[in-house]
Length: 99
Picture (cartoon, rainbow, N blue to C red):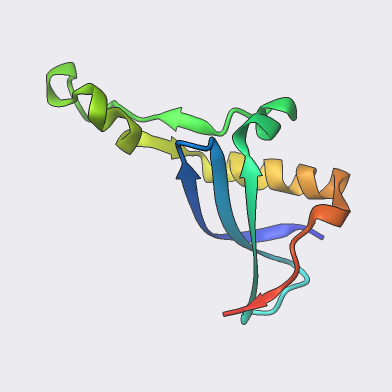
């Protein structure tokens, strides 16, 4: 099993969790999988998924409330982490859902 497509992801800042939807090489075009994973668990695997992207703005453009809006995830790193996570923990691979 290998994740071939990242459909969507959402970072839950308050709970430090990431909700992710993806498709594996054994899923059809009408199927996907959805999971919620702790960002701490990703760090335990050696992955720092959160990146702060402030290159476009100067310090004067942002205040503290805006900082969370510019946290992003490198999708290639997320896919690598998920592939490793589900290889080590195949029992945690979510069941298929239909679109």
